[in-house]
Length: 377
Ligand SMILES: Nc1ncnc2c1ncn2[C@@H]1O[C@H](COP(=O)(O)OP(=O)(O)OP(=O)(O)O)[C@@H](O)[C@H]1O
Image (cartoon, rainbow, N blue to C red; front, side):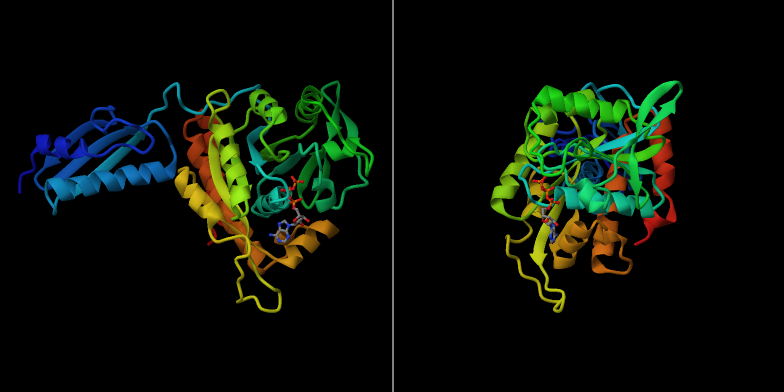
C-alpha cells in the first residue's frame, strides 16, 4: 500500500483544531506529513496545552485519514505545543515560594464554593502538597469557620528584617482570611480598591513560606474585586463551582467568560458540579436530582473546559463544614473519594497548563503529580 501525501493533506483540510476557525492545513497547525508504506506521521503544532484539545486533534486526524484516504493506514500524530502571544500569561508579580495560585469561583452565591475550596485544600495536603487558602470572600468569609479557627488571629513574624503576617494553620493548611480582620457578625462592606489592598497585603505581606498551591476563595459574582485580583495576582488558573441548576449555570458561564476575556486571560482548569444529587445517609443508593441532572457537566462540554467531577448533596458535608472539620478528612468515605478524584483532575490540569510556563515551575509540579497519592485511583 502506498499513501499519497497530497491526498492526506486534502483530508486534513476537512478538519480544524477546536477553537480555531480555519482548517488545520490553512491555520498552519499541520507542520509536516510523512508517509512510509502504510504508515503516516503527522506533525501538529497546537497553541494550547489543554489535554482535551490535543486528544481531539489526534482523533480527528486519524479519522480524516481513515475516512478519506485509507482505512487501514497506520497513523501516528506528533503534537508540539507552541505558545503564541494569545497564550494565557501569568500577570502580576510572581510571589517567591508560591508555585500555583488557583482561583475558586462560582458566579452564583451559596453553591458551595467555600466548602469545595476547603475540601480541595485538605485533600491536596493529604496528597503531600504544601497548601494555603486565601479567603477573599469579602461578603461572607466562611473559611475560618470551616477550619475551626474563627477565634485565631495571624501573628506577626519577622522575615528578613520585615514584619509579616503569619497565616493561621490547621489540618496542614495555611489560612489567611478577610474574616480575621473583622468582628464576628460585623457586616463587611468593602469598596473594590479597599478590598484589593487588604488582599494584596494578605498575599505579598504574609509569610506563606513554600506553597505548591494557594487556593483563592473568591467572592461570588463577577465584579470589580475579581478583576483587580486577577490583574494584580499571578493566577495560574481557575476552577468554577456550580450546581446543576439553570440559574447557577448561567452565572457560572459568566464567570468563565470573565476569566477568558482578553484583559484577564486566566485559563479555566475545570468545572466542579456541587449538589449534583441528594443522597440520604441511610439510603446511599438513592439519588434524587433535585437541582437538575448533569447541568455543570454539560456546561463544561459546551465551553470546552475539563469537567473535574461531582459532589452530592449530603447532610454530613454541611455538618462537617459547620463544625470546622472538612468532610474529605474522614477516610474511606464516598466523599473522600469524590474529592480525591476531583483534586487529582485539578492537579493534572495544572500540570498541563504549566507546560507553557518556564521549565522550573512545570518540572516541579510534574514531578509531584507522579507521586503515588496523586496517581492513586
Ligand atoms: N454538597 C453539599 N452538601 C450539603 N451541604 C452543602 C454542600 N455544599 C455546600 N453545602 C452547604 O451549603 C452552604 C453554602 O455553602 P458555601 O458557604 O460553601 O457556599 P459558597 O458558594 O461559598 O457561598 P458564598 O460564597 O455565597 O458565601 C453551607 O452551609 C454548606 O455547608
